[in-house]
Amino acid sequence: MQRRPLLLALAALPLASSAATVQRGRALAFPRDHGAHPDARTEWWYATGWLAAPGENEPRFGFQVTFFRSRTGIAPDHPSRFAATQLVFAHAALTDLAAQRLRHDQRIARAGFGIAEAAEDDTRIVLRGWRFERSGNADASVYRARIASDAAGFAFDLELAATQAPLLQGDAGFSRKGPLPAQASHYYSQPQLAVRGTLARDGKPQPVQGRAWLDHEWSDEILPADAVGWDWLGINLFDGSALTAFRLRRADGSTLWAGGSLRRPGEAARAFAPEEVRFEPLARWVSPASRADYPIEWRLTTPAGTQRVRALAPDQELDSRASTGAIYWEGLSELLADGSGRRIGLGYLEMTGYATRLRL
Image 1: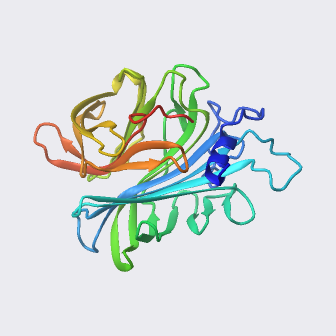
Image 2: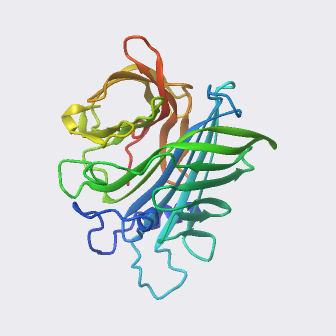
Image 3: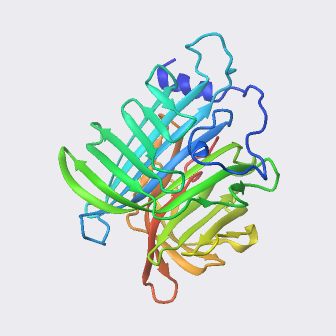
């Protein structure tokens, strides 16, 4: 077998038994929970945001970098140091709004030998030269993302500094993802990250600044059997608020489960019940590559009110079949006041399971 199909086949093996790693009532503790949780089946650190020239407020680019860690079916006490007990893979993407062009790349490797590692004591992940690391105290994080893709012709070295405390999603970081108690994750976000650094396109560097959002989530069972994928968004509002909304979707497009949160400046987060979240598609785009039909504009109704979410470029589809095995849409989007159409926030919209059923 070729290397990447072999690694994906390892990830699909039945899991060795372990105690549940996601439990209601478990208090998240930082900085430890900024790090990896190797007993959990799957985990990701997901940073998205917009970039502009220093001093500008109109976004010119969207960026995304996600590092995944996956526990395979090989027991962690396997005697061989070459046993692939953990896989690390990553996606990186850059949306050029002026050119309406998406560049993206992906990597995958088994953990070990200094090639791919996810530290347990704090956020410190490396994969074949790509790095994502955290510094600072537990509530004042500063992340650094260093990504370079010769194949896609882009690179960025970005510092993402927290301006707010971590946002614990769901019930103090215990986030339900389905009707059964086991269908849950530990999940927190770092919204309203202040970004500065350097972006290079085709070898030409430029200084940039902007705003970003980070999700860190780990789970043993995050996708119910009758769910084909999800719709998710994380939006930094211009008034300093943070809005999260998601739904898990059945094959017929109906909602299996939903959730989200709103945190206004100086206030506690307000978690959303499944019945309080509604996604209504308003406009669609069909990918010429995969033929998947994506809603790229939504009417979103939550306890935060009714707004519209609209993609800033229609073609932000990523083909990650060489790493995660999935094709999905993920891109920079704006949040609009439903009545006036005024832009009130920017963030990322992610839609999975439209090309083929998502499998985790």
